[in-house]
Image 1 (cartoon, rainbow, N blue to C red):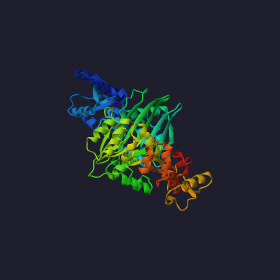
Image 2: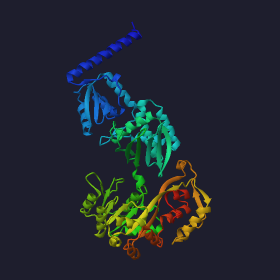
Image 3: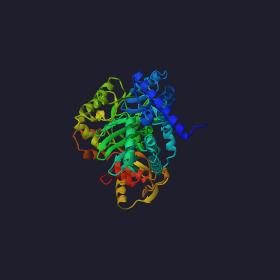
Image 4: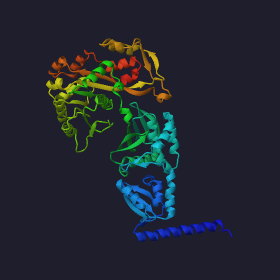
Length: 554
């Protein structure tokens, strides 16, 4: 005689209670706490620390995590497959607290694996975003509108799945459109998300505060930040792998009036790995720099504001001169791009710029790259290195090449050694390149024409000006450039080369304006001149040029 549904349900409930009671009795025997996971929440980020295959084999499940402490559900602490799992967690810096659970509890935890996005553990113990999931999401994204639609779709999913998916969509969108930074900013009503594309921020969409909270928890765990700290700034990092290439993501979180604001910087090796020929230097300057950096001693100083591409230029120069016959050492903060065959060191708490430079000089280098000259001691040591058989690359925070020498004087360097130590002083900016698929030609007229004609008239080498100099090009916007009208960036440069006339002038402690007046007599173009020539040649637009360089003062 078949049992009624009600009776079946009653017997099933009795069996469930019996199994839970047995688990509770065994917990006392083994000295562990008891937990019923059929009535408890399961933390997805804890669950993913153990693969589903290993969890089922050892009959365990990680169900909660606070910092580096993991709550681990298990059927038996004596299970033969359990020790390797515990050892693996220990090697990655995690502490475990065991809980006795029933089979039903484990089944419920294992059921949650299908909601995960298969993120993996990295060697450091941090969680990595799955490259397969990122690749699959990126394949669906072609434009900014696709990103908005994907995020909106994920935002409607159930809470548990949102935690795992939303960051993957945000990152996949950034990679798909070649963004360099992701900005997530809290406001009173909602949270604004923006991407930096070719150096300019673009609004992507807004999300609600609940989704922002889930995103922050996931991001903090990935970046190794403290989940319970919301009133102090924190910095962390994690990495993702795409197409066999690892990209590091640096995370900066600061507290705000309406919640935490975060910026993620995507350090794509391909973005900074620009060949020397692709920097954008005009032919005469390129030939000069290439000749000077192959000298046995001297110094190349590159100047410009933060984000102007100074470090990328130095890397390109390093790769140009790199060969098995020479030793190159760098001191950086941080190391942004790894160059094979180059010894790269990073400034740390107990390893300053000066420590790094002094240590590097004891390593018998031919070439030294110093990420930035900031103080008197580093400046003096760098100049001494350039005078004693080393070639030194470095950067200074001044706005123009002519400002290099007054800045070094302020740092205590004797102007008498400038001519012996410094080979080239450069300055640069980055301008967005017009999209070749949609840029349009427009006549050069009005005030812009007056400015352009004045600048072109002062050029020492007129061969760089196109035959049709009466036109400019403007952005339009298409699918190829995400409707921005621009695709990629290129440098505009100026340089001052040391010679007898400049040496004599520098001994009189001249102003930046006096040095600039001498610079304009030389064959190499100023920033404004290089920019105007690039605008006339259709490389960039006039509006983009005046966004980064003052052409009227030239």
